[in-house]
Amino acid sequence: MAGVAGREYPPIEFEISAGRVAAFAKAIGADKTSSVPPTFAAVYSLGVTAPQLFGDPEAAIDFARLLHAEQEFTWERQAEVGETVTSHGRVVSDVSRRGIRMVTFETATGDASGGSLCRSRALFVIRA
Image (cartoon, rainbow, N blue to C red; front, side, top):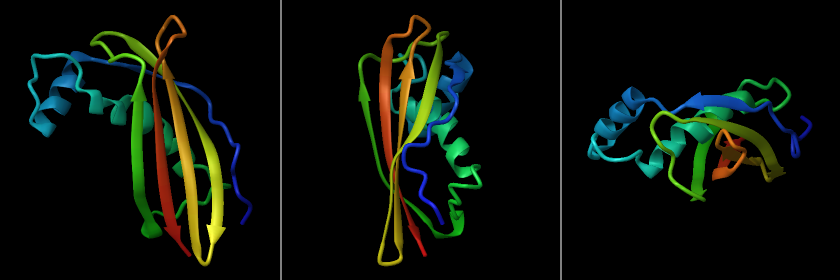
């Protein structure tokens, strides 16, 4: 199996809708009437780009053997209800050692003006 380090996926637009934010806030026990919870980035950043990696036959990610080992976000600013953001995912590294494959996936998310909103970085560990 060839590694896919350096692979980039097409950008995806996502509208931060009030309904989705309210449902997410309710699910995590946050105030539904306040601003967008910072952890909503799991939806508009990683949540929209990771399926591109997982659906890539060359990446060959085996869900039955996958562990989502790490997740981190860094924000330039908080997302706002009603705005449309664009997320762009890429494989930072794809390394195999002793029967364990480690894929680091990063997503950069920006706003309509092209400004940076947040960055997501995840480590997926896949057993051989």
